[in-house]
Image (cartoon, rainbow, N blue to C red):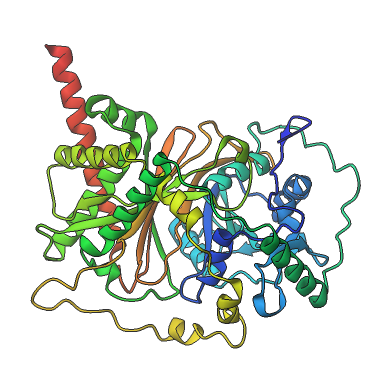
Length: 499
């Protein structure tokens, strides 16, 4: 939406603004070792006091109503939680300033940022926080964290377009017409009565589903075949899948010019995302080879999120994501052969409409009643059953003389988030670069976020240090593969020009 020239984020979900089942699933799957909030670390030019950034956000709060809303839970979890005004909203709490020793290096500051994101976000407050980190000479770090129940990758970009400017001296947005006055928190009896009323209304409106069209039946069949592949064609169990993750995280990153990526695509075809996947999967294969992991004839299975928002859903928060689960060789290959393999695999998945098939399957599948998820709401409380596992994680499964048992699931997530291709500013200061972390949990000890900004691509690798102690090696392999692809593409171009 536009508000006098400024974008605003729409809040959907009906009168009650209740969480969808997809959004709520991120609350229910959360643990002390696997927080379900994502984080980004933006490096700003200049040393910016927190109060200036705080004031910048304060002037835009009315454009993002969700920033002043918290969750309330229905007694016995008889319905999904809902968003309501937080009568105790305190912007200072959500934008704390952190002072590191003067002259702190950027890598050390990033490591401290990762420690800040280890605890769960309190559920009795709005599910976001922005730390302003000082101490890096000539720069300020802005660490932004938001729960996945509130936002996904696509809506993160929409949110950035509201909170950030495209000019250093951009005017402030028009103020809210009326001062914000939060509604009082609903009483438990009110929440319970509302949930029961909604349940009866839903039952009264129930109709047998319409007969599926041939196209829809075909999508359902595709989804079922994809899901059957998880057990029929299991993936390799890589070292980062050989145990449950603990609460610690590491981040390794590098950046490249977007135009260079386009050079590779122009020569070898496919998409930019194909090049990303080729770089990451060949790096992972070389990592396995370095550690003498048996990989011949075995495959990685990736999870690649796909935004399935329709035209009328643009600019909304929440989660509207499906996925592709490509199966990619886990043994090392020539980089050009790797890229062609990835391009063919992804083209096949798109031709068969895997994202749309899985999205339809999600819509048709019966939802788990919220009351069944009641025990998970103890997470983050003094009775949290996952706290012990976070403090004393299970030992990592060591490899015997042969490969580990196969993995029924996927090895890691690779998500490609397109950002603004022109510089952005906050409080008059340019955002120089942005790194992002990926949520890890269960046996997923590694993940990759590739974020494009200002004609640069930022490869961000998140790892759990017990499962992936040498994440820097994975990053170096990825840089090497990228360099080999670029050199090969330029050799082809040079040869063609010479001929």
